Each structure stands twice: as structure tokens, then as C-alpha cells.
Image (cartoon, rainbow over all chains, first blue to last red; front, side):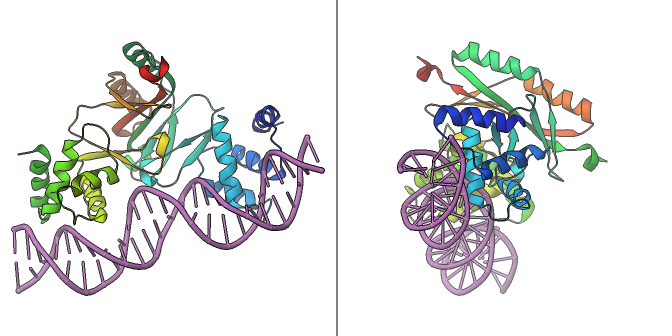
Length: 143
Length: 143
DNA sequence: ATAATTGCAAAAGCTTTGCAATTGG
DNA sequence: CCAATTGCAAAGCTTTTGCAATTAT
């Protein structure tokens, strides 16, 4: 079974929630994306399977998934209004966005861990998450 | 003269723009903040000096300043709708936000430069800016 | 003089919400 | 059964925009 549906069922058991056909569809649809879809992109793809699905349901599910740490919501400079989403299950990664074509490239950076540690030592606070955003020109647009 | 007004005049000369009383006021007001005000916060403070100032003018000025790299716009998880602004003149810094009280702490991190270099080497792209966001619990809320 | 900028009001655009109808456990 | 969830339509909120009036140069 898909990771999401597995995870979702656990959360639902702990909270008296219910697995509905809409949730199942939305979970599967998000998993089918490799990039960072918006709510609307998820909605459009999911609607191909169930024409009655409503955009509100997508938003509600997305928020619920975020609260349960199944996905992260990200905002990029090129469209500050719309949020984009990616599964937390993907290896810890950060984002580069091309300022010309908008493409998003994911990358890993061990230094992020150091930054976190360093902050915790300096401030005695606790850091739960770290995200690094790079903006610039991608290889394709550079040449 | 304030740094902003200086900078602004240069940009205006190069583009045939004009220095208006509203712009001067908005520039000074932004400079008067130490933190990361929203457009509305800037508007409210500036309006104490000029009750006729319009929120649209604040937004237009903010966007113009961002295009001319006088300020950065930042979005934090606790309120994804509203943008927050800080002067680019402040030393290169990154942000921690407390998930409990919302407080923002600025910090510096030399590792950011390494992350940038590493990305440029790996992808042959050009990185123009980097920002690191940490989320967690601040010292005050931790205890 | 005249082009840039402002104020005002309206629109845009993403996201949330109230509520009656539906549905999963 | 009955509480959780959905669909629908309307509202909410931040930000943008069109346009006539104003103003800097």
C-alpha cells in the first residue's frame, strides 16, 4: 500500500477520523507528482479520476496532511500567493529556483545540520526544521 | 541623509522617476523598524505622519524597492498570506521563527556560502541569493 | 508642460468557512 | 446511528490595477 495511505490510516485511527474515497484519491494523486505541485494542480489531476471532487476538499486534505506532517508547504518567490507541496517522506532536501524559467531543483546539504546545531548552541532554543532556498539562474537558462 | 533616501535617489535618477513626499515617508518609516514589518504595519506607522497616505502607495513603493533591491520580502510559515520586509542593507542574515510565539530571530551562518558554492559546482548554475529558515521553539517558550 | 505618481474603489486570486446533505465505521 | 466529511456557494484577506486628479521636475 502507498506510504501516504498507510500513514494516513494511522493518523485517522488516533483521532477518530475517517478514510474517504476523496482522501484516498488525493493522497494517491499527490504521490504521483515528482515535483512541487500547487493545490490546483493536484485538484486538476485528481479530478480526472473523480469529476465531482471539490477544490475545498483538496485544500482541507492538504492542510490536514500538513498538520500531520505528511507534506510540507513551500512558497517560492516567483509566486508568493500560491503554496506548493512536497511529501515529507522525500529525503531531507532544499530548493533552488531559477529566476528566469521558474524551474525548481532539489539538492541536499549537510551544512544545514551544522547551521541548526550552531543556532541551538547559540540560543538554547530547539530547532525542528530547516529549509534553504537558493535563487539564481539554472544551467539551461545560463547558457 | 538616510541610506534609503540616498539609494532611492540614485535609482530615480537612472530611471526618470520622482521623489515624492509619500515615498520619502515610506522609506523613512521602513528604516524605523528593527524587525520584519508587514505592508500594513508600515502603512499604519507611516499614516501617523500623513493621514492621507494610501495603502496602495505603500504596496507600490514596496514592490519598487524590492525590484531595486533595497528590501527583501520574506514569508514565514505562521502567516503565509502576508509578506514581511527587511532592508537589504542589513548584514547578510537568516531567520529563525518560533512556532509558539512567532518571534523572529536573525542569525548569521557562514555555511550558507558553502552551500551556495557547492550548488554552483554541482549544477553549473549561478546562485544570486540564499536564505535559510529555521523553525522551532525559542529560548523564552522553551523554558 | 507633461510624464510620473497618487488616491480611490474595484478587481483579482488563493484559501477558508458555514451549512445542509452525505457517508464511513 | 451519528459524528466526520463533503460539496457548494459565499466570504476573507492580502495584493494588484484602472483611471482621473495631482504633482515633481
